[in-house]
Image 1 (cartoon, helix red, strand yellow):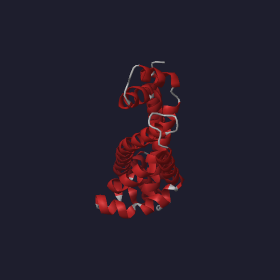
Image 2: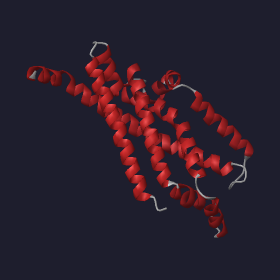
Image 3: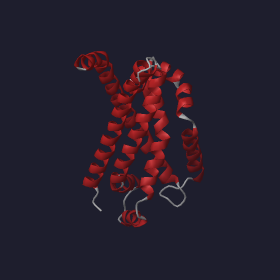
Image 4: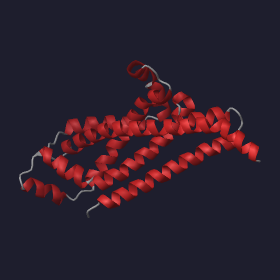
Amino acid sequence: MYEYIVEYIDLYLEPLAQGTLDTLISVSVSTVFAYILGICLAVILKATAPGSLKPQPVVNAVLGWIINMGRSIPFVILMIILARLSRFILGTSLGVVGSLIPLTIGATPFVARLVESSFAELPPSRIEAALAFGASTRQIIWKVYLRESLPSLVRGAAITLITLVGYSAIMGALGGGGLGDFAIRFGYYRFKGDVMLIAVIILVIMVQVIQSTANLVARRIDRR
């Protein structure tokens, strides 16, 4: 039994550790970029909505339609569509680097709607009070929408991270590296169900840690 464990560790520990690290890197980096883009889109959506700060019905409708279209494309198809773009911009469509553009673009519409929902949770009285004190549009966006929605944004970030963990596993199964790649190459192709189970367990642990951490941070910064 001891020899089996030692052999098991020698065979799988290094690729498992590398796969875990690759998943963490790809998910973290793509979440950051998706949130930068998603928050910008959500701010434009909120500001141009009818009855909002800068009503622009046409802009709002077109942008909302684009976001909905992005959300409706299955990630596997989106990943294939964006492979050429990844090769053009990053020089590869494989591995951690090649996964960044599909993960970022796949998550951005999702993030935009999450952030928009966070903005919608704010009481209108806070916006009205800011306007009454003469706050500019930029100040309202920064000090009211973004700052007051921070706990909800943190919880939304956890949802995005967890979603991208699943997306990264799909990417890994199709050449994107990470735990998905580890599970396919060392588990599925070699008929090693226990190896695939280990990859699944690590993914579950990641999800639990992300959600628990986000809940803790959100409670700490929630001033309500």
